[in-house]
Image 1 (cartoon, rainbow, N blue to C red):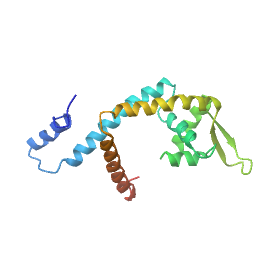
Image 2 (image 1 turned 90 degrees about the horizontal axis):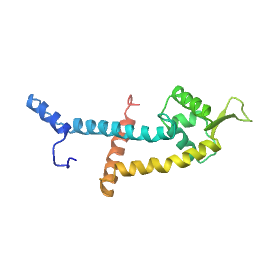
Image 3 (image 1 turned 30 degrees about the vertical axis):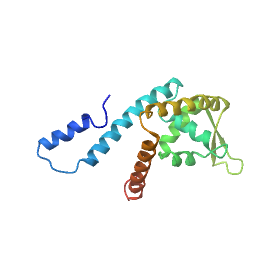
Image 4 (image 1 turned 180 degrees about the horizontal axis):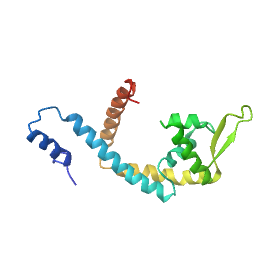
Amino acid sequence: MNQPNQPDDIDIIVAQWQAQGLSTDFDALQISARILRLEKYLQTHLLKLHGDFNLKAGEFDVLAALKRAPEPALTPSQLYQAMLLSSGAMTSRLDRLESKQLIQRQHCKQDRRSIKVSLTDKGRALIDEAYPQHFSLLQSLFSIMADSDKAQLSSLLKTCLQHLDAEPGTD
């Protein structure tokens, strides 16, 4: 395993650019490349874990959103807005989860045009079994870092995302 002061693949890429005569600040390249590599690593491990529960990409997120919701049911709009998805992507996920009998969609009695989504007993049992393993996996993947470093990294990424989210045309 590389130590923080030892060169990694991204340092090699920067050195190669420098050897080509490019003289610039490479911090943004190094940060973005490492975030992208980390994202791929996380995605691979999370997809495998969620697959162990017969869940496809994003299905865990829907079940988790319903589990932690303050109300027993949410509208599809509330779900896709909370998860930063398009309505089409959410509909597809809801269709798959409903076919697995993990969620149910019900028309509201007051307004038949409005639909509420809630966990079934089977869905609740599945997410209750899956989410502790999800959090355990994340904790193990970042266990190399000190708590203070994790907090600092989280804060720095939050600052960056808040800035990017505030810029027009970056959604």
